[in-house]
Image (cartoon, rainbow, N blue to C red):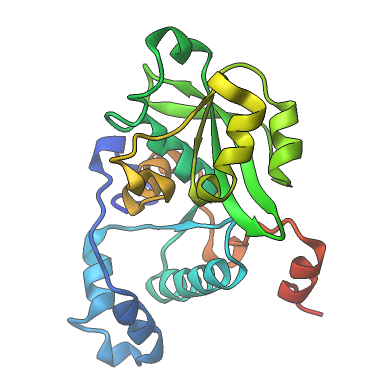
Length: 234
């Protein structure tokens, strides 16, 4: 992510560049003298901060991602901007054509609801109101670990669902909400997952708002107590 701690960049300066997972893990296994010209130098050229989705999501994936980013950030003396995986998914609803199947008269009242499969017949979910003029999503309430049935019972008005939880629970959602339920167009299966660009957009905005933290403060978002206990040091 572009920008310096002292001189925070404009949102438009944030840019994403691909660095492979193999490169990232290789960086952490090398000595400082071996870093010259490698993936670490590539990351250093991108800017003065890092970004990381912190969950909720797959336990191992979130843990590995955060551990990797902590190592990179500490090794390069850079702060990290934490980003919610659910928000990174929700903001994808503002991409061109994402709301193509939502009638114009329903959009002012629309709530975006990202769903991430949490297994055990549950999903990670949250509700967001889109601010189309500012290009942001505003969360209403808290992020949840909940059964799709219990979630839908709480919802009012037109709803836009996206995320990998949709494929598993779409039939149940439509059965309960009927014509109030909307989904991404069939030709946009990419909207069922967060993207690095979405994480970058959110991180860029947070950076300008002073949302960066020291890498030692970066923590994963969990909802199941058993997982939290396993993840926490004894």
